[in-house]
Length: 226
Image (cartoon, rainbow, N blue to C red):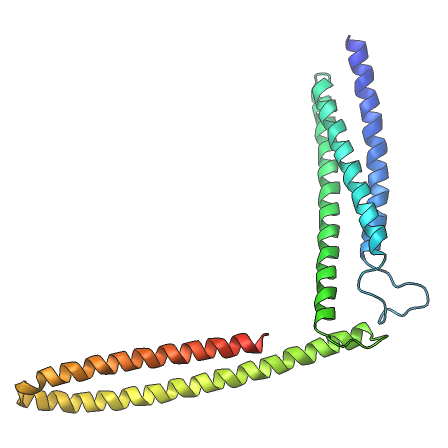
């Protein structure tokens, strides 16, 4: 029974090493494919952002299957492993290799997904694309669009700041008027009720004006980025 277990253990180790070598080579090709090297006859400026998407997706599915198979073999190795520190170290090493491969695969897949999303954004930002438009031209148009948006936002911020300064000036004026009225009410107590109503209305008007300015600024910023 021990001999059969040892034989199965060695067979699984052999399968794991073969799979690791296969996955390692495929991950290198997978990463290079994700970099989207320029096709023959095209410059790097006019190449598409994603090259050979079908090939990339096919290799992605193949690598997922290989990684799952390697994970299953590692689990079987752990189940029938002979005792001893050397065996435990071997199992740990195989699992570390698997984890490294999974992280590399995930990182490459995430990078390509981000590039695909960026490509879609670039396509969406050009309602009337020009045939043969280079990637540099696309970036230039996008930069001009962002620059225009920044200018519009700066203008709206300046308007908001001017409105704030105007409100501050009005507040100072109200404070001076209130000081004078306080002097009068100290002399004429019957005016306290009138002052209370004036102050309440002033606070309400200030609150309404502040809310209106804030909403208008928010809507202008929202419009600028859309």
